[in-house]
Structures are given as C-alpha cells and as structure tokens.
Image 1: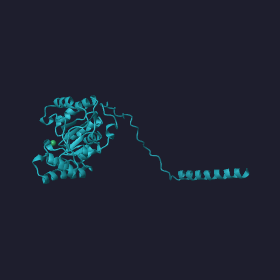
Image 2 (image 1 turned 90 degrees about the vertical axis):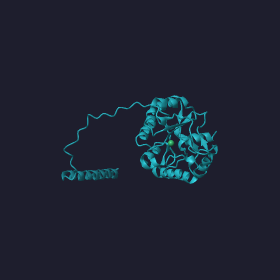
Image 3 (image 1 turned 60 degrees about the vertical axis):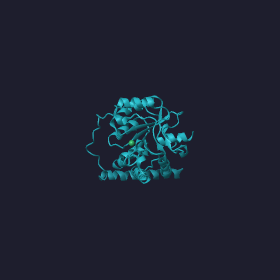
Image 4 (image 1 turned 180 degrees about the vertical axis):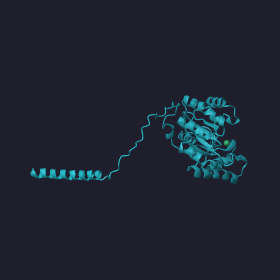
Length: 275
Ligand code: NI
C-alpha cells in the first residue's frame, strides 16, 4: 500500500512538473498571444433558398442497366424493345458552345441520360464540353468528321470520317463511341456491314423525327415528340438548334409524365439483345 501511495505521489509530481514548464513558457512570453482583433460573425448570411425540384427520373434506376449490347441483334436500329418503358433520346450535330450546356443543365435537373451523336470537327473545337457530356453520364456516338453524305463516299473516305472522329472523341473525353449515326440517314447496306466489321458500330437511325431542324417553333417540336414517342423509341433531335433546346423542358417533363424511362442507345440495344 505504501509503495502504491508513493507511486501516485511520484506520478502527480511528474504532471505538476510538466504544468510548471507550461507556466514558465507563458511567463516568458513564448506562447502565441491571442490576436487583438477578431473578425465579427457575419450576421447577415442566409443560406440560399432551395429551388423546387422538377420531376425527375428515379435515382440510379435507369443508369444501372448494362452497357454491353449483343452485336448479333443486327446492324441497323431505329428502336429498342416495345414491351419495356425505355426510350433513348439522341441529340445530333453538336457539341454546340451555347445550346449543349443549356441542354445538359435541363437533363441533369431531371436525372435523364441521353446520347449525343457528335461531329468530329465540333469535338475538336470544344473538347471540354465533350468531356462534360461524358462526365454527366451521357453517351457519345460517332456522327462523322464533316457531316457529309456517306453513301456517296468510297471506303477510304468513309474510314477517315469515322476514324478521325473516333480518335478525337478518345483524346477529348477518354471514351470510345460504341455506335454511329450516318448524317441524313444516308448509308448503303454494304457500308453498314463494313462499318460493323471495321469499327463494331451498329448503324443507329430513329423512330421519332420531329423535323426540328426546320425550326417549326418549340411548341411544335414538343407536340411532335410527345405524340409520336412510344416505348422502345429512339428519338432524333438536334442540340445544334436553340429552338430544340427551348422545346426540351416541356418535352422532357411530358415524356416523364407518360411514365417513360430514359436510357442511352447502347443500353437500349443491350435490352434488345436479351429478348
Ligand atoms: Ni446530323
């Protein structure tokens, strides 16, 4: 018992010793003095008011579908399965420095994923925007370098159009395009098969065409898409045109209101492969 008491006393002595050192330091002014002036708290700060959320697709729902489609399902596609509520929105001829960012904001607010058939020349001009498309979960498709009429081209020229675009997409966004869409839908059957062999790209056409490039006004674009879009549809639109983007809030909300779910073209084809 005596030994224990001694130990306790000894330990206490050690602690008081260390306290003494601190006091010494304080006395000698080695501690950092408190700043004389303190910043007054900002009493005027208010957190930003939450904005009302638009109708949105369910989180993680449509994005979790597989990306690997079965090439055995065929070379040309204008739709997916009609017995499922999935559709693929596609936007062609971008990226466009003003319209594409506006569209991306609208899609992000609603958790909608789409597919962008980009022109190689535009990707080269706007690599950061191309990266943003991919970073926000959308898919890139190959829409050639010059947007020429492929059906009038020989194989060498056709190869350059697709390969240059493939390369600039990889160098800008770090992803491989998995499908292609011919400008004007103009591609011969033997060219489609040749492209499938050389690049592994199925040729993607569309089931719904609102003719938005004729600029009929946003309300008409919305009405045409809403009335024609059924389960499995691949919808064609152009993020090149401001009117098309103006039509999108009502179009997207209308499609969501119909209970349709949004996937990328590759995801739509993956479902088709399971049929
Ligand atoms: Ni086009």
